[in-house]
Amino acid sequence: MYFSLQCITILNKVFIVIVVGLLVAWLAIDTRKRPEQLISFAGVCLFIIAIFLFSAHRTAVSWRTVFWGLGLQFAIGLFVIRTEPGLIAFEWLGKQIFLDYTKAGSSFVFGDLYENIFAFQALPIVVFFSSVMSVLYYLGVMQWVITKISWVMQVTMGTSSTETLSVAGNIFVGQTEAPLLIRPYLKDMTDSEIHAVMTGGFATIAGSVMGAFISFGIDASSLISASVMAAPCALAISKLSYPETEKSKFTSKSQIKVDGGGEQNVLEAVSGGASSSIGLVANIAANLIAFLAILAFINATLGWMGGMVGYPNVTFELICSYVFMPVAFMMGIPYEESFTVAELIGTKLFLNEFIAYEKLSELKNNRLNGILEDGVDKKWLSVRSETICTYALCGFANFSSLGIVIGGLSSICPPKKSVISSLVLRALFTGTCVSLINACVAGILFVPPLDCVDVFQNAVFNTTTPNIETCCYDLFQR
Image (cartoon, rainbow, N blue to C red):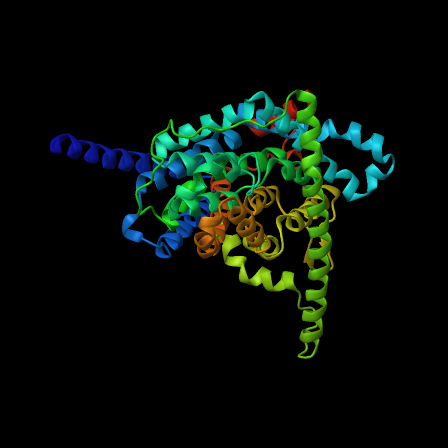
């Protein structure tokens, strides 16, 4: 028995060495023409080291969980970013489900107001998707998908069934809805499992609000893949930040059952989903009003205080651009654009992701419309920086969510209130790091699209280079 266990341990170590060696070889080959990808890889290593240094129990870290979680994250990213089937599938999902069908109901109810007012354009998508999710729950589709994703992560990463199921659920629902999947079991979960549940909520966004971000003009495939990639990464990094030191009661894969809703038919599911979204829509609108007003007040105050010492242009965004610039640079953002991305990271962390994505959409529209500068300030981002930033902002990890998590989880499981309150800040920090690692992985895998305008300007007419052929194929195919 001892000999067989020793052999398994040796084989595990050999397997890890082989995987790391293959990854290094792949990076060496893949980054020959794009060395900036190495900065993103260094960013992954830096964030993991930082989390390990601040780990609650460094000697108890399960490296199997960490490596498998990061491996699953990388595999999902590789499929979505580098393969044509992955790109097509995720783009179709974003365009068809979230946007096109919502227009019919919104234009009928709001008429001409639908085209010009944010509340009538973006927020109805939340209502529609909430109804879709309710129907999928009634049909049992969501339960099946969540349990299968949970099973894959649990088998590979060796985590407990409760925490894995909750984190898998966070791909589709919000940080207070996902724990409802494991509500009967919360009182018996360990502190590490509670931390993992909260980290999963902070590291992902709900499918309902994802539709609103897509309506801003944010790339749909990047948003969806970011939320999917964040699930295994959140579980891995959570176990690195707060490793398991207790004996879990939920190690068996057959202990957890996911219940469906109480609806009697599809029509009731549609109506119930729409009705339940009213509070979420009102909450989004109220928070946007409040936080944008607070931001304006903070900037006015900082400008007044700065004016007293000769710096009247000091703003919250300017401070964030300097504080988070190293973080943005380590994600793989070019130096000249890292200050702009740092502003968005700070806005997302201290205010919320809605405001950050709205600002990112402005930068994207400026690039598409040719508005490149405003005086001396750069008003756009490259496609690579937009993509990396989309991944970095994809998560509920901000200080305004602390009260939501504490209140939501404490109401579900009052006996764990003290544990939740003591671990929520660590979970917020961990969830933020998950989003940043997600962005780094996107930076490693992202290949910038071919600039056909530049290719044609610098090409000889009778050339047969692959770039010319690709551009001509793309143009005439359309």
